[in-house]
Length: 236
Image (cartoon, rainbow, N blue to C red; front, side):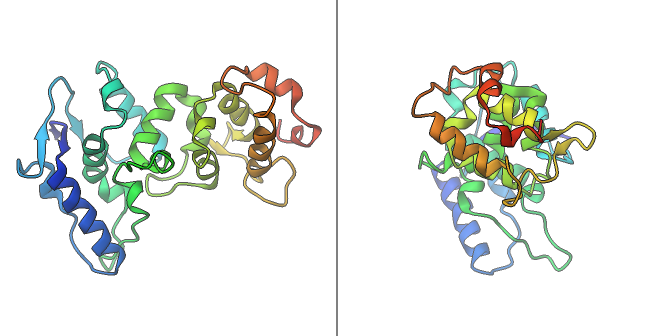
């Protein structure tokens, strides 16, 4: 069953945040799904396709679905819209923070569900970043989004912590070449191991050095591959 996409208003955002705070302090509360449709807490949006409560095997699947239903919408004015992205996170909360057998949940940081006004925390939002990566890079982003919707994973954790790197196409395309395992449709074994040369942390450290002398926003996949140190060859 499809539902019209809405956005949380200020009252709805406060109520959702209070729920998350209470939950993180140990209270067992049912998600406040009434905020999604109650006009006191949310408001309708025009020119959006309806959305469904689909079950996604991975974050990538969620991103593909979002890209499809939002492709005819001018998203520029919604990139920083707290109410919009937070509404979607609440809509799919059962997947982003699934209940255990005893009814308990393990919520992540609040900014994983409510889009933060802190620029440094925005890449942590589960839904916005998922959509952003798939809409920009398509299947190239699969290696970052191959885990369940409720799991982040070390690769995206490291890249999202340096927000400007997510916007560098050559950086993402080379990371895909290095760490994506096409047979497993996920990242390669050893990609997150601190004991392996050329792991994701080493890659990011190398990029931070390059950033002093190269324009990472304009560097191409081929150009970056040509200057990679030898330690990355075994991943290639």
